[in-house]
Image (cartoon, rainbow, N blue to C red; front, top):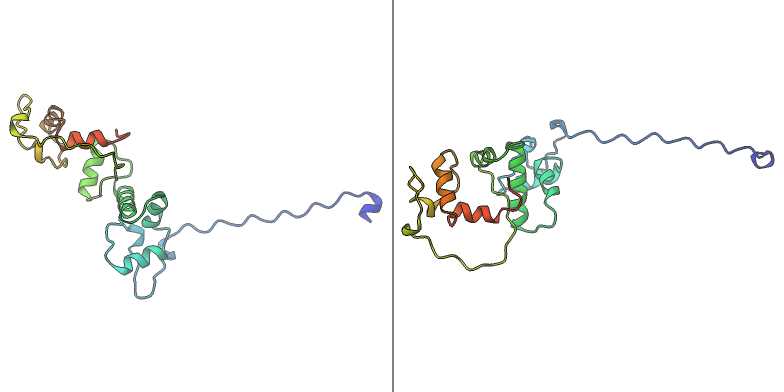
Length: 180
């Protein structure tokens, strides 16, 4: 009849959009056999030595480990674990920090440092000796060769590191690409 009378075809009904899956909540925690995963929403990703950690993270990919893992593309082995732990710990504890505040936050929560790109091998500089240490006015920098870069709350830390760029802080800073 439609063809004989040149009636337009009736529009097809538009299917209703498929609703998005609900956002993960503690009520959606999956507990694999023999494991209790009630900690998954607060996972800081630092512990990897239990089969239940692995099973809970695999069963609950919406948790911090799964979110961090999705951001660590192209890695393998321990490089991936380092990347996941850094992103997860940082996102869990230090989101929104800036500058030295981030350094303090990472140290307080024992977050691993962000993996640095592997530079081409360069010959090691000669080991610093006490006669190469520069002491800015009012500061004694005899610790600079053993600097663990953890303390940033003193003007002398900054002055010593700037006056002795061959130390661990200067070497690490030179390897940072895009740091602020």
